[in-house]
Length: 254
Image 1: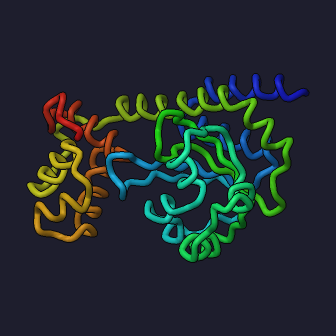
Image 2 (image 1 turned 30 degrees about the vertical axis):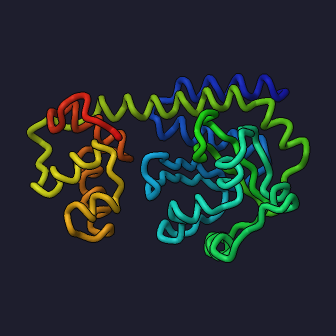
């Protein structure tokens, strides 16, 4: 089976997957097979919230515990994030090429990579061409990525970006379908306040300052909100709250 036929089959499996988690895993597996990687990570940084980070890992190896995964500040300081934040290039790049060009790894990045047990052999697939913050996939292995791997991923980027968007929309639709009934969601008064400030676009630090509590406490309130609203991030939590009548539709997000 040639590459074109293989990706037609993979795309069909993703589009017909019964669950968004299955579609996500199929896309990750296709990326790893295409690039001979043993780990694929989907990373999302939110422009409006410097502390917000979504990350998921699919691997053919033992994955480090979640508490060792990087936080948003470490991801933003990584050369790959810095490169996309300061250039207009949105094509796939190899970390080794950036390091060779002078985009050095600082001590914090080295420590984070050591904690995760990964090397500099990292290859990106940006999925949001108009964002300055990185939003997309990073595949990793121990042996490096060839010029052929880089060229193939670049050629496939339009298809892969489309499949990635399908997976995201599928997850959003599933969240709407599976949203709890309004009377099943009971928020505390403080959670209501945090939710309204989240909908207004306030960062965790801004919410903490407004309520005279620590950012850690704000993050705990957000975790409780995400669980109760069956949401995975700020946007899906706000949308779920609007659907349930917990927030007015059209709440400001800035």
